[in-house]
Length: 121
Image 1 (tube, rainbow, N blue to C red):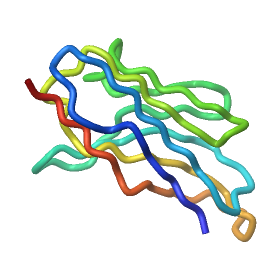
Image 2 (image 1 turned 120 degrees about the vertical axis):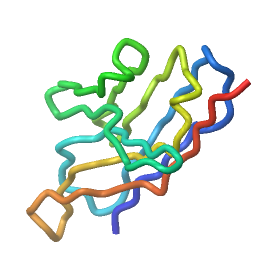
Image 3 (image 1 turned 180 degrees about the vertical axis):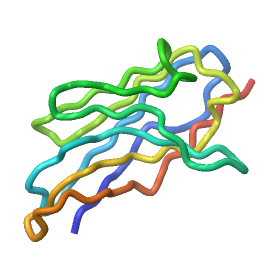
Image 4 (image 1 turned 90 degrees about the vertical axis):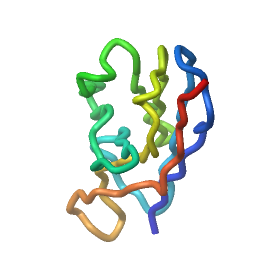
């Protein structure tokens, strides 16, 4: 079994900051990519930011310059530092990992259960 567990969501005022974290645990042999997606009410899930094993990050245009994704490779953890938050950032944020398990040499997508971020005054 593999689990991705997010933490750090909540209510924040416009212009504020929030930090999300996610830890992957279980029978993991290697992690290729970790990152974050989000789904706003009535919209499809979309990429926020991901980071690979070389430290190369890819962020969606709406969050560039405001959100920073980082990884702790030793702890199988990915974090998302969010600044200058806007009401349109309100969404459920999902942790994502592309990883291999001890019983499957093919890399597979895994998802966390999501954490709600609400940006409102």
